[in-house]
Image 1 (cartoon, rainbow, N blue to C red):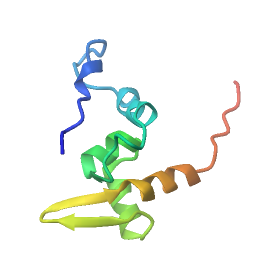
Image 2 (cartoon, helix red, strand yellow):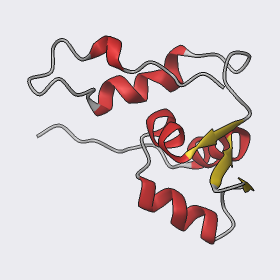
Image 3 (cartoon, rainbow, N blue to C red):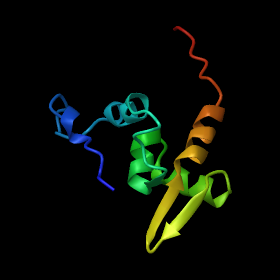
Length: 95
């Protein structure tokens, strides 16, 4: 499985790192046909914007389906999508 290239958007960041906005855009720009069925933890973080710690808590509570392949933890993309789609809408009020 080819590692996604997140570095193409780092030119505008002061420290040369990819911003969280750039990582979260992965989910918006890729369609389901081009995405893998399972994500490793760093890929799931980049895809969802959910922290590594939160992903482990969600897996531990049975909210996210995960598998082990050797030492690698693989998160099922469909279960991650269901979790994200089930989050409540943000209520942001103007100041």
